Image (cartoon, rainbow, N blue to C red; front, side):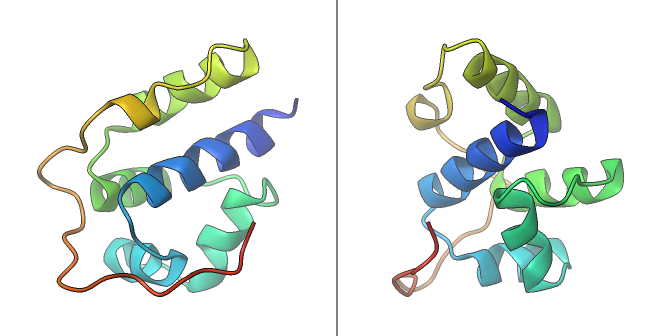
Length: 102
């Protein structure tokens, strides 16, 4: 599996775990909506600064998503779903809209 594709899967899992849409994550991280979509599909590799902004918005540290990506590539998937986000993550005031992305 390509690292960018694996990272995209981890990013999406972290976002869904936070119960936020791509648009909400992009806004919280100061990014364009397409950036999150492309990264989740493995079509865009994030710069370090963008990775940090996304992780801050989600309440993760960059190393946590990178370790989870390595775990996915090694067949040990599942750490994201079993941890609580940090308190610095995005806080929703209402339920997110249903998504059609896969």
